[in-house]
Length: 227
Image 1: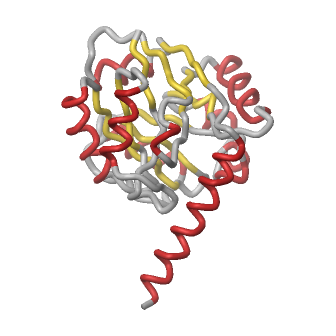
Image 2: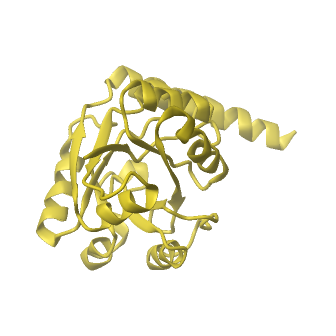
């Protein structure tokens, strides 16, 4: 079984703080086997992280968090940027056209662009996997809803820390029964449902700091574009 972190953000995300080398170093330090950097509507840092990963004994997985018209979708195993703003079904199609897999993160968290309020059950169940444990939680209700949905509809399950600072990498991991220690084998195993999830809640004080820091960075970047 490989311990895989599937949901992290670098400074390239509008609400991320740290460069990719810190994310990779943290992943190695906590004993992970593989890491995906999934920036919001960006892919360059993920490609950089995937290249750095091997130097730290990790498998690097290229990915991103796409803002579809319905909400967020994680894209893994892609080579090119998936455009933001496309319909949910088209977003999944674009990911698969590149040979990737589509995982829906925090689907029932409305305030964090979860897709569930905007798509049918059949559409949500058409994803290659659903993130059923996101460590940035307050009550855990949305995670329980996601897990219940995945079980009912037979959709593979993943977990992710949703780390926006390097210290939180590894808070939630997907254990993957992959045949080989490669990105392709890991993604194939996820799509086949050969996973289990492990997670710890991100301390609420850290979540608040991540939120506040992200809001500050977004404001600074907005002001910079206006100048």
